[in-house]
Structures are given as C-alpha cells and as structure tokens.
Length: 185
Image 1 (cartoon, rainbow, N blue to C red):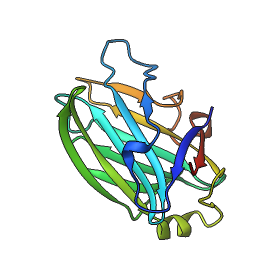
Image 2 (cartoon, rainbow, N blue to C red):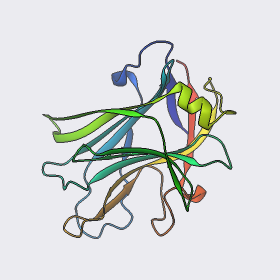
Image 3 (cartoon, rainbow, N blue to C red):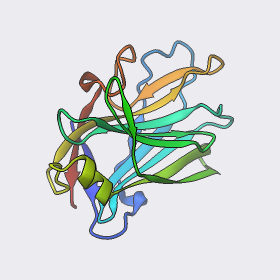
C-alpha cells in the first residue's frame, strides 16, 4: 500500500498529515527500538518533511534519514538529521553524493509519549525542479522512498525503517524503497 503524501495549496499543517511510523527493526537483537516517525507533504514552496525520534538520551550520531527517488534512474534525494542537530541534504547514488540546497528547523521536547528530538525540513521547489525536472508535484503522482532511524554507535546500534529494507545494501538501493503517492484531500 502506498504511503499518502498530502499536497497543500498554502502553508503545510503537520498535524493533519499521515504519520509514517518506523516500526521495522530487522537487525535488532535487543529491545532498543526507539519510536520514530515522519510526516511528508508538498506545498507551494517545496517538499516538507518532519522527522521525529523519541529517545531520552540519544547519542549524537543517532540519525533520522529520508530517502526519496522522485524520478526513476536519477539520484535519490537524501535528508539526514542527527540528534546533535547536524543536518545534511544531498543527491546520492550508490557511489556518490552531491550537496543539495535545503533547510531545517530542529527541535527537542517532551510530551505524553516521552522525550523527543527532530526537525522540520524544507527542500525548496526551485531545487526540486532543478534536480528532478520531469517530476510533477500533482495529485496521483508517485515516487519511491524510505524512512530510516539509524545509529551505528556500538553502545546503542539500531537500524529501523518504514518500508522493509535490507541493510546489507545501500539505503538508496531500489529494492529498499516503497511507494509514496501524492493526494490533495
């Protein structure tokens, strides 16, 4: 089943979006599976992605990652946000990366579910148009991607994903990606 990505004619409202819960931790042998989620939408100004991880004491290299392949046979859009606030956006293939223009507003807090960290990412529409000239942001357009919660630090290693993934392969490998569909209701 395709994950629904809302199309806004104005500013995005994250509270009205579908939530992608990262519940698949195929390599986890212990019980450390931090609840993580993402929300995704397109608005007039570009692609918006909210990444959120519930970890009381995250390691600095604990990361949330969004990988989207907006056009087949082109590089993937990769957004990486670490618990220490470090953010990186790039176009990536299995062998190379090219920096991409994007911004993030990071946040931390606590609610009834616990302590969390995360950020709201914006990839401007002009950047999307430049990198993916044939991708149309419109109702029923589809693309592939996946969302990841990762930490390679040996004290708390974990590898979580939204769509099932083989972590022996690169995260951008097409076999690790599932379908997303744009909706406008």
